[in-house]
Length: 238
Image: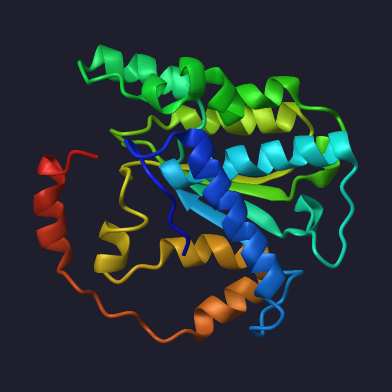
């Protein structure tokens, strides 16, 4: 897992630099650590999904412009297996309007250079996407909750539509009824689920092998009873 500098100590550009440094490190070291450089996927949740998607699209645009080739000390987006965005934010301008309607402090413009929210929004970045980018981008899988109170599910549906319009493969765009913002990373694991693994493995291994691996896994014991999690839902702010 990779962390990044955050507001107020950093702006989005700094966060993207941190994501880029992390990916450079992964590809420089994965083989030495026993990993497979041909089987790498990026997974991000919430702001992490926003930063991951933004980074990949910007990297694609740079590779198209500079004709970057894979070499000993470089890597290409085309070498990645996929991107998985969970409960993601892909249009900052839309989210900022939503926050304004709810009476929340509009902090997003302060995180972006010159307050330009569209320039830092993956959905809007796709409007200027070069046709060659579609050949570079790995497959995309998106997961969102219909009851998300932090990032409306329209963030994912609109992003998926923009990706497809740009010719980029969207292997899945799943908006689940009743699911809220943190369920894939908090509530589901606490109650013995493994929603994210069920979404990640098909990207890395293919549907058939992923199903076989998942069925062979031992049961995961709940860390909290379901009724307790259900009781907490009404006060969960996300």
